[in-house]
Amino acid sequence: MEHTSRRGFLAMSGTAVATASLSGIVGGRSIPQSVTFATYNIENLTTEQVQSRGDPQAAAAARVIQEVRPDVLALNELVNNRQASAVKDVPATPTNTRAFVKNYLCVPQREDLTGIEYPYVYTPPSNTGVHSGMDLDNDGTVDDTPGDQGYADDAYGFGQYPGQYALAIISRYPIETDAIRSFRRFRWQDMPDSEIVRDPTYDVRLTDKEADRFRLSSKTHVDVPIACPDTTVHTLLAHPTPPVFDGPENFNGKRCHDEIRLLADYADGASYVYDDNEQRGGLHDNASYVLLGDMNASPGDGETLRAVNTYFLDGEFNTRRFPTSPGGAQAGSPYLTAEFGQQVDYVLPSPDLSVCDSAVVWPSENANKRGLRRDVEAASDHRLVWADVAV
Image (tube, rainbow, N blue to C red; front, top):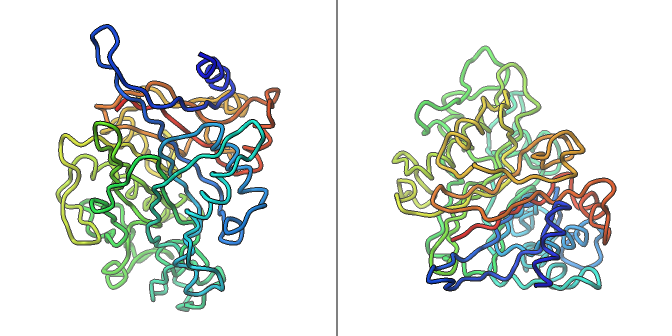
């Protein structure tokens, strides 16, 4: 029981070592298998950082991940180097996702830690830094030269080059690649009763011509089925646009709201949703799923029109217990997941799945055993969030 006692200690400090997934028969009852799902925004981790060893930020992030040892991990803000290589002098292979696994996660990052093998990875294309060919910021110029703010403002998702701020997923369990569905090209105007901004009195809005092409997802929305023991769990990934840098039109806040709504509507089986292969419809009624990612929205957030309350708290997700941490409590609330004082990162199972345990990896100021607090601060302004889910 040494593993269990260590887990109990770490849970009190805001982290935990995920137990080996167990299932069996006890007293004639079947014990559900537990799978640890996690999400981590690692703050613009670049190709140059992960394609070779020795980067301090990447190593710190790997130490945090090796403490928790999730089975399935969504990564936000990891550059998609396949896309970036089209305009930057960076390698297209291996993907940054595989490079991060090989160079950092497979390698013990401290003598008391062990490496983790993640044989299954998926890196979808991102809308960030993909130029729209339109003057989306209405400054009178279509800036199609990568590398500056003007280019980023005219891209479908903010990025100074294609693939910046992208996302990925890594897994110990097989990814059912043939069943992956992505929604990167779904147009905002195709969401019924959307919050799309068209009012011509606003400086930032979409004309009819722009709306005919404008994509809702600022990065991508994707359904990645994971072949967990005994069942398939659909991991729903996204990273909606931050609801900031807005004027009175609240363009980014409304876009963030509808990006969150798209996830909820898809989980609820909405018929209007179509994927990048033009297949329509959401998840089927008996599907199990877990939503993962930095949603850039908090409960009660006015900028996003209370999207978390409408679509998570009152929607098709198990929100009976949010993860907490002592470090977050010291910063203002145990539910916080980022240094800037908000709860924005989520691991939300479907209602049929039970959460056995969960936490935000954020030790208190006076708890720095093994240097964990130093690592979480060096790795990102976000904190890793995990949940053990009985599948």
